[in-house]
Structures are given as C-alpha cells and as structure tokens.
Length: 494
Image (cartoon, rainbow, N blue to C red):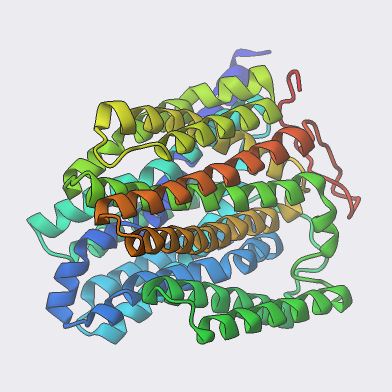
C-alpha cells in the first residue's frame, strides 16, 4: 500500500471515530434529559405553581411521547435516511429545549417536554443504525458499541448531578438552556462527519395508517402505565386504556398484513435474534427498573440514607459499567462470543439482586449493599454490548432502524410494566406484614425482598433465553427481503 493510501485510510479512521463522538454527544443529550429534570422539580413547582399531581407530567409528557414514537421513528430512519432523521431529531430537540427553558406557563413547559420526547425518540431510534453503517468491521463495531453503551448507561447518573448543579448555581431554566449550544455543536459536527449512507427500501412511502395505529397504541399504553404508577392504584381507567392500546395494536398488525409498504414488515418478527432479544430486553428491563427504584427506597426508608448517600451508593455500579463499556465488554465478546458474555453477565446481575433479597433491616453498606452493587455492575457492564450485536447483526441495513425501535420499545415497556407489577407485589407484602403487627421498617424490608427476588427471576429467565437461543453468527443480503443482517458479530467459541 502506498504512503498516500495509508494516510487516506488513517484519515478515514479518525473521521469515523470523530463521527462517533459527535453522535454520542447527541445521544447523551437525550439520556440526560430523562433524569436531569428530576432534581429541579421542586424549583419548577414553586416557580410555575404546579400542583403535585400536575408536576409529574413534566416527566410523563417526555416519557409518553418518547416511548410511543420509538417504533415509528426507527422506521422513518429506514425509509428516509438515518442521517437525515438524526439531524432532524437533534434540531427539533434543541429547539424544544430552548422552549422549555423559556417556558413561563405550565402548558408551554409540558408541551415542550412532549416535543423533546418525540425528537429524542428520533435520535435514539436511528443512532444505532448509524453506528452499524459507520463501523463495518467486527472489532471496531464492538468497540464503538461499547462507547455508545457507556454513554447510555452513564448518562442518567450524570443527569442527576448536572440537574442539581445547574439548579443550585443558576436556576431550573438552565437544565434546558444547556442543550442549546450543545445541540447546535452536535448538529454542525454530525452534518459534516456522518456519512450519508443510502439503504434500500421498497419505495420510500410511509404506511400512514400503520403509523397512526401503532403510535397511538404505544402512547396509550405508556400513558396508562405512567398514570397508574403515579396514582398507585390499579384503576378501572388504567385497564380500559391498556385494553384500547391492545386493540389498536391488533388493528395495526392487521393493517401490516395488507399494506404494500408496511411500517413494520411482519417478516422481521421471524428473525430469531430479534425476537429472542426483544424478549430478553423486556425481562432484563423489568428486573433492572425495579432494582433501581426499590434499592433506592430500601436505602432511604430502611437504612436512613440521605439523597447524596444514595447517589454515592450507586457509584460502584457506574464505575464498573464505565470500565466494561470502554473496553472490557468488547474483549469479552471477542473472546467468548455473544451468548456466553450475555448469559454470564445477566446471571451475575441476578446474583446481585438475590443478595439484596437477604439484606436485613439493620444492614450496613459494606456488608449488605456494596457486594450486590459490584455484582450488578459487573453483570450490567457485560450485557449491553452483546445484546446490541445480536439484534443489529440479524437484520438488513434497511431494517436496522426498525429493529432498534422494536428493541428500545420492548425495553421501555418492559421496564415500566415490570416496575408497576413488582412494586405492587412489594406493597402487597408490606401491607400483609403491617397487618400482622410488624414494624414499618420490617414490613418495608419484607416487601422489598419480594421485589428483589422477582427481579432476580426476571433477569435469570432473560439469561437462560439469551444464552441458549440466540444465534452467534448471522449474515444476510439486502436483495433477500426475508434475509437476516448483513453484519456478522463475533461468535468466538459459542
């Protein structure tokens, strides 16, 4: 190879990694905004005169539109270009953030948060497809997905810290204003760095009725779950909304069997890795959402930790996940393959959850909390990378956005449903213990033990599914509409 060719290849490598950094900053904005607002809620309530019931919709308005739009946004990326949709999402999110910062009424803030959720869904749904297009080699792709997973997993913790800092030093408006210069810079960098890769689609037409029915169905389901979690009761309204959501989803599936260019070609559901990964994501998210929520309550209400102490207690998990995401996970996948990395990681997580199910009322951090945090961190750090490789290696590039949307949607819905169901079991056990004469700390601990055990069961089941049923090498051609993905993830010795 000539000197010029080597220099050109080196320049191309640097450009790809710069594009990844810019893309990850865009995704970081979205991840941050899922938690950055939580710390500022009391200040927003006092400033805009929110009631307690209305205040939660600053969070829920984002979550409902985000969760309800992921599937549609992923498919829009496949139809109209992942790069184009990513740039549209970043631009819209930046504008919506400015509107949130300038909001002087309750209605304007909630509406702008809803637009943030919609545009955030666009960015997240197509970001993985862009990474798969930019990085085509197995080793580079695994490293890139590791960096992406680090951003996704660490962003929520950073959001809490950033929200508290900006609100304390300035005011709540700045948790949104900070996105404006960041979003502008990300847009400019991605405009110049991201390749405009064209994927083959049927004819670029959008299945309008399919889009309307599935998006409405998912938004109704997210609204029902969010509202039920807030009111803490299994109301008849919640069941009616979930029934309507299920009926609309059935209508959507019927439409897809007849549409010339379906929003979700049903043949993708026959992709073995996509189907198994969706189930794995659902169970994994159910356990992990409940773990994060219930473990924080255990430390706050039973052990008596303050907010800062609770945040520091989760620090070992974040540090371990960061270490795995930035290199260790990629090496594990390359050495042991998808199934072994995924299964062992999830079993480590399940062991950590089971340890928490034995934590006593008078537990201490070093003996009863830290060991479980270490196990959960080791497990979570090992899981994200092989799961992404399994999903996106099983679909053609023209369907990668759809696959990403499906898995993200299943994860979000699984987490929300899992938290609602496991929390209800926890509350029921606590009430039974209180009725039998137990003290409040003992009753709470007993309820939390049930939630931790059920979380461990969910994660263990996900581990068994992933380690036994996922395929380790998949290839496809774009010309075959029923084919599987063009990229082959590492298989090693599975």
